[in-house]
Image 1: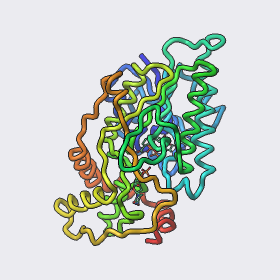
Image 2: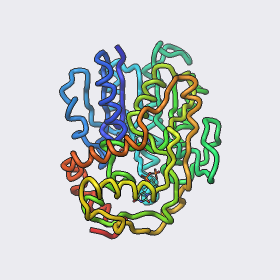
Image 3: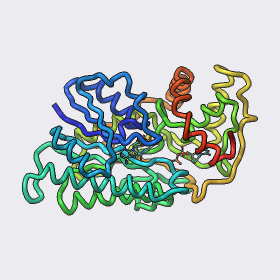
Image 4: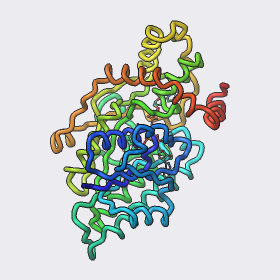
Amino acid sequence: MKTYLVTGGAGFIGSNFVLYMLKKYNDITLINVDALTYAGNLENLKSIENNENYHFVQADICDKDAIKQVFEQFDIDYVVNFAAESHVDRSIEDPETFVKTNVLGTLNLLNIAKEQWSAGDDEYIEGKKYLQVSTDEVYGSLGDTGYFTETTPLDPRSPYSSSKASADLLVNAYFETYKMPVNITRCSNNYGPYHFPEKLIPLIIHNCLNHKEIPVYGDGLNVRDWLYVEDHCKAIDMVLNNGRLGEVYNVGGHNERTNIDIVKLIISYLNEHADSAITEDLITFVKDRKGHDRRYAIDPTKITNELGWVPETKFEDGIVRTIKWYLEHQDWMKHVTSGAYKDYYSKMYGQK
Ligand code: NAD
Ligand code: TYD
């Protein structure tokens, strides 16, 4: 009977993880701590909000008193830290918010877990673990060949990835200095339900359905390595249960695609299955993102060999499942794109 403190559980991957865990296990307690920024949405968790094993606490991970109170109220075994500012374009506009949440928030969680789990000098109560959900973006940008392994040097290039790399270094420091039981996972780009439409895939779907231009940065040939979100959730569960303490695990499914290929694929599906007015005429090449990383690609050999993790969802199936989910949840899309989203969008792309 484990008790999980999941932070950022109202966001994209966090909410998928909360739903995955509560479906898989009926003998866990799961506390979701989320500040409910623009990216957090409790609608995602409607189906489990009355589950007696689930508790929601609205709090900022930087808030020492609030986090301490959660540890005092619940006997936390695992911390899974998803809470973060996660959008590269926003980090270019406002790096400070990213440092606050992603670096200082992580530090606060580490400090409180260390204090609460302490069983003497560098000793911890049995069975505790802190898992930092990180990203392949900490490794920087690849050329046409090669893969990121766990020993690839950190070389973050955006304020977002720099803040995530800084957090990873702190997590590692707490392992080396204080022997805290920790793991770090570094996953490639996720896609799936509840993905906020500021990110590429849901933004394409949103704009297609609203007959808006699709802004493709630069030449559209940047490459991302896409993984269905549930496969990421499964990897985190495996690392929590069986990951060797202090280790980093890369997570990715060898599914590299150029951005323009993703755009064309989604347009083609929607044209055939939803609305014949959705065509490639919506594609608009716009000014490139500053410092735009060219290619990400993960080598997942370690997590496969050590923990037996393999991705289950093929991209061809996952992307159709995802598009169908958005078609069936247009109210969700309307809800998350009302209010501040419109201001953000017109500031970014000059469109209404
Ligand atoms: P998201 O932006 O969709 O969700 C972030 C969540 O964190 C939101 O619910 C938000 O309300 C919450 N939050 C933000 N600041 C907070 C704070 N100060 N205190 C408490 N809660 C706060 O992000 P996501 O895409 O679900 O990413 C989750 C994690 O996974 C992040 O750490 C991200 O770096 C990492 N990651 C994401 C991807 C990806 O493709 N999305 C890939 C690899 C790793
Ligand atoms: P994004 O979803 O923001 O994820 P990340 O930058 O963390 O990989 O972007 C994925 C890719 O799509 C990235 O190369 C930037 C590009 N992109 C566009 O071309 N247009 C857009 O409107 C967005 C949001 C992203």
